[in-house]
Image 1 (cartoon, rainbow, N blue to C red):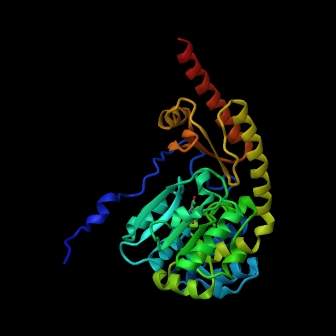
Image 2 (image 1 turned 60 degrees about the horizontal axis):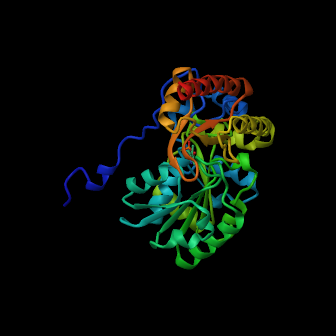
Image 3 (image 1 turned 180 degrees about the vertical axis):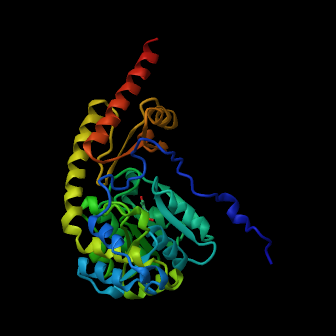
Length: 358
Ligand SMILES: *Cc1c(COP(=O)(O)O)cnc(C)c1O
């Protein structure tokens, strides 16, 4: 018998992205245009049964909505309370205790957390040009390879050829490939149609970002039915609340309406903000998502983030990003919010310059 608490949990803590309440929060990549109106309408039409009865075991209405949207079979869809929950179930389903989870780094911080939570060993491989060799990811015989595409926090999307090679290698070794498409709605490119064809490939998506429904906690995954079954075994029943599943389904059924328009505006603003950051020589990375990562002007991301937050604008700081160093990630929202950010940024930049010349 091993005593409580388990020793490998010593490396874990409660998740803390360091957010505080501010005027303009550009730190968490949620949709700053608000929630999908169809989802809100479904919540407003709630009745007693929505609360007093159990939800569907495996959220079939939501699975059907996803299947319709992508022209696939509902057996190819799993769901969860947020895509973090789908990822969690997939991590657990893929691996025995002590197995290796490999991923290109830097990436979504939950990748290593979920590995540790599930008794696995995280193996970050620094994302560089050498990574046109996906073999590197397989060096430690991982049971799972996680790739975020487009990647959080850099916004870059791994090239299709690279993914194809990785998927081929993993098929040979029996490794599950997990592609996290939390931001694919902004990129246009997706591996969903591949995932229903090839073995060992699971694609996860969320309604937290483009759909503006982070508070609902809904996500889904797409793969062949044999993969989905294994994920559902570790997921368990009743994971998605009735109102959340119904509201998410309503939003997904109308993905070409409100959401398409809000994505359009987001991409326009992304382009504009990229140019503004370039003008200020802050080396913004070319992003395929609803955020941009750029060089921290003082060299310390935490110092810069604190200075901006003191003026009411919250960004997410990152330490030591390869080729960029300390960096800041800004969520793209309606232009007036970004204008406020640029105003505060400029005042911070002149304060830094003043310090230089003194
Ligand atoms: C925000 C985010 C998620 C989390 O999505 P939820 O569905 O809200 O759990 C998953 N992956 C990445 C890369 C994210 O940035």
